[in-house]
Length: 156
Image (cartoon, rainbow, N blue to C red; front, side, top):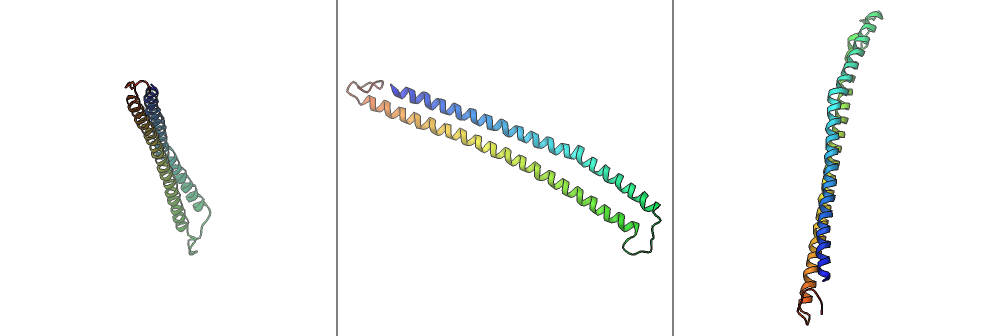
């Protein structure tokens, strides 16, 4: 009758595999949601604040250049070139921040995919153990049926 224990053990292994998969999938969903929140926060809060700060800095720089009594005849140091250089630095800064945000977003999504794969692996492990237990139970039941008393419940 020990084959019944193998059947129950196999069923339990499958249930554990499904439960583990569910846990990993929920964690993956949380990670994906967090990635979306971080991305939206960057797009709706951080990036507009960065642009606003840069606009304020350009305005202050322009006022400082006007009030400094600048010399327009000096090549390479005109207020226009100074402001142009600052605009290039600002655009580069926005590009770097946007790139970093995108890389962070993609890393979080990749982590979610890894968690889902781990969940699938746990489910597969449970199914393999279940199938092995069922095969073991079938072997025991068949072996019992070949006993002198012919019952699958006892081995004679």
